Length: 275
Image (cartoon, rainbow, N blue to C red; front, side, top):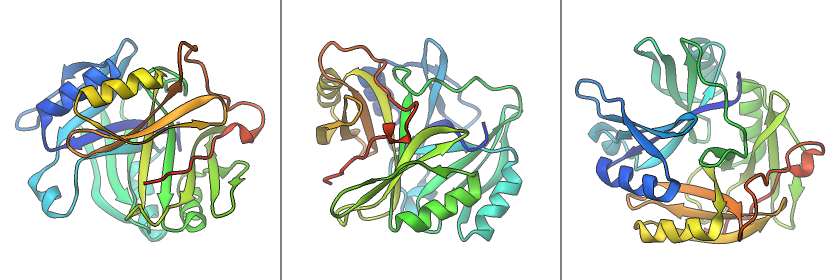
């Protein structure tokens, strides 16, 4: 699991509204995992837990954080990796700590201020979902202030490797792999994106129907649908509290198994953001 994304969390300002929105859009169930003074919801599907939902604290708001999704990358040793983050020029915002006897985590930012989590199960965790599993994250994308510098950091931290890059006249899209599987891509961000940030693409069976659900539930389609290599389509969205997320799927009544990330590394898809 080292270097693979293992968990996702949404920090929001409106707990009830976020629950209602994502259950309508994604079809997830919910399970209340709250502790004393700590409201926490698990979004679930038939296979188990998909992601967590928590309240954005007043302290985080004062520090400039806004509703957002955060991905956590599995590592063999959270403490040692957090120390390596600082040696490589990043910052650790939440020092390593345990969640009961279930997991250990930390939250950090890379040298360009994009945030991620570090994660390790303390007990045997669930196996990773297939990259094309409906309702799960199938692609991870970093919009970086400087793509090459960002890749150097993450390669040194997690052992990620470059796949075959895709180039246009003004931009290079750099897919990357972990444990031999392409799991995401990086690019130098457009000027319209104010800061380096990670984005997560959730799989849906029909992109047009998913877009209708986003709008009906009070979200916004910021960009798309855009066709990407492999025959699928993507849309970039915000939920009613302003958290950014993306969806990927077929158009019409095509089957869900649309990812082409085996064989040639060029099976990864470049995306051109317009916002």
